[in-house]
Length: 117
Ligand SMILES: [Ca+2]
Ligand SMILES: [Ca+2]
Ligand SMILES: [Ca+2]
Ligand SMILES: [Ca+2]
Image 1 (cartoon, rainbow, N blue to C red):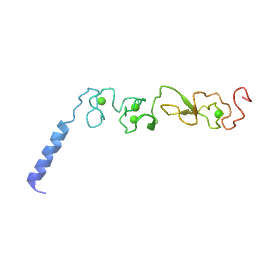
Image 2 (image 1 turned 180 degrees about the vertical axis):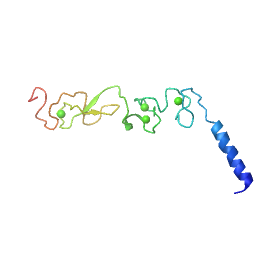
Image 3 (image 1 turned 90 degrees about the vertical axis):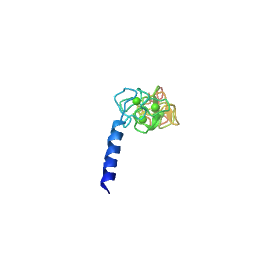
Image 4 (image 1 turned 90 degrees about the horizontal axis):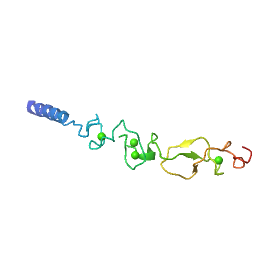
């Protein structure tokens, strides 16, 4: 590598660093901010159910275990319609999920509130 090319690379490196801007003023620059035009989106943000990656980890909504869902869905392992205490990280009801968490035995479909609980 020639001296000129080394100098050129050094200049490019300096100008790339100078391009590190924080357009939306959220404290994160274009390098770490996955949306530098929206201050509500940054690695500091909470992941919410809105179809976009709010916290810049590459995972959108309920692909992201950190998601804060609007509702609460619990696992219903035995399918009796009553859920266990296991809160699911989902944005909307999925198969095997219910909005209830009152099942005292989620491994037995014959035991549920009013029936053995
Ligand atoms: Ca931002
Ligand atoms: Ca995310
Ligand atoms: Ca989101
Ligand atoms: Ca159940």
